[in-house]
Amino acid sequence: MNDSARSVPHQVDALALQHQLSRLARRDAAPWLHAEVARRMAERLDFIKLKPSDYLDWAPGLGDSQAALAAAYPEARAWWLEPTPALRERAAARLHQPWWKKMLGGARPQLAQGGEPVQMLWANMALHAAPDKPDLLKTWHQLLAVDGFLMFSCLGPDSFVELVRLYEAEGWGRPLPAWVDMHDLGDMMVEAGFADPVMDQERLRLTWADPAKLLADLHALGGNVAPGRFAGLRTPRWRDRLLVALDGMRGPDGLIALSVELVYGHAFKPVPRPRMSGETRVSLDDMRSMVRRPGKD
Image 1: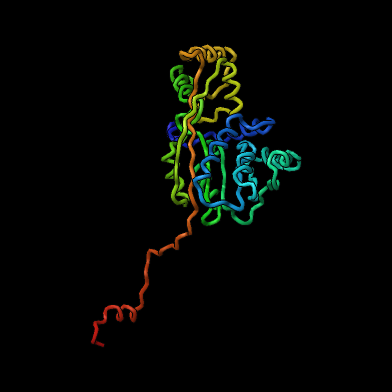
Image 2: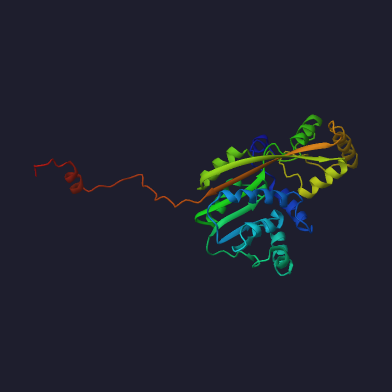
């Protein structure tokens, strides 16, 4: 990977991403952080007056938002759209199981097969890992009805910054991609056709007593898909060095802390504006009538 590719802030290694998604699809549970982020994002729905009659949950297998959405919109029709093939198969299997009756208490979600656009598109913890974020935002825009709205959450650039500094100090490459700043995401939303984007951020401090448990929890969230990551395979000896380095990061409370920056965004799909031609044609008779002076023929 060349230096110019590494400088693109929203780039991830697409092949590495597919590998990690396939690995996560084999797990029974969604990443442990995502349901909490979904709950926090759902609290922001109180500020939106529109109560959608239907919504689309983008990448529900890892977003883990069923409980939060069902509580917010118990009467709305729910659609699932799973872009990852391995996760799509799991989503279809889950919808044939009785879990949704106890968990949601309403009509079960259905897999989206295209058709009419929805009034809300919900995407929890998906945008930061997209290889092409502007293209994904355009896709979300197309799936929305006019006056419908997008709600999303993702990781911000200060997420796990302590781990980034450690890797830089040791010369170990990137432990994760350089996530996009919320202001740049807002610009991408406008470019994709959204109106009135509102961006917000929240910071969490996560702590561990055991460095090995820290690594296991990070592995459960996903893998390293940074283009600038170490190209080879890590050895057990390197892992031992990493555990020692993490253990040296303990604070005054004796715990190892990592920061997580959560970015929330929402925006509406406006009525499309008519395209203006760069050329205006006026007939000679119309031109004469426009310049004709009063009282003279």
